[in-house]
Length: 258
Image 1 (cartoon, rainbow, N blue to C red):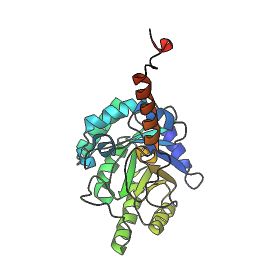
Image 2 (cartoon, rainbow, N blue to C red; image 1 turned 180 degrees about the vertical axis):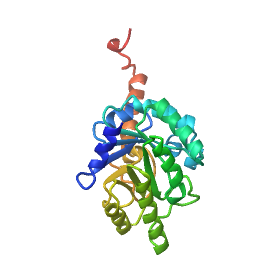
Image 3 (cartoon, rainbow, N blue to C red; image 1 turned 135 degrees about the vertical axis):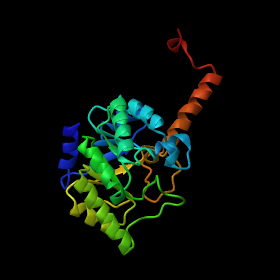
């Protein structure tokens, strides 16, 4: 666990950190060949369950997906999102983090927030729970449309404070979500731990995307989402061929039958 975290930290200013999400063994197994970090994100709420908010994701649901993901990972650092209302105070946070790590054998957890959760983060780290921070847009707290962060002076000062305090509390890295480019750059240069960007420019030490977005499996219209392949097209092609072969009695042939 610690050696993998040290490896992530050592990449700061040296090489970009590659991060993606996974919710199952099969996907994790393929991602692991190319990633440094795999996140079992609460984004699974909208991606897999069609929830309108990540708030609906429960501890039990994310644990079950994380157990599956663990089976597909050999080398990448595996981090699990702490669901909404599972870290409202130090006692609750520690109990739930221990449960996640024990049942999923993950390498650490990710919490949303900065200064407001500094005492909780510090308590977890004192108790040997590796923590990754997350500032900027906080999906668990957003109501309505996502809006980028770091445009006003007030936001800039607060986000810098959030990043600095998370580093001070002992986080090994911080996700910067939809933070204005110049501020992302300043934060990345101001702290010694890696920043992982999502919609926060290429100034960050690494990048993360929701894998289903990257593969074209969702209809996401979010600005930072780039579709690298249209997997839906290949799915349709395969299913269409299966249907045709079944109708025309070309499948199953003798070689596919007992």
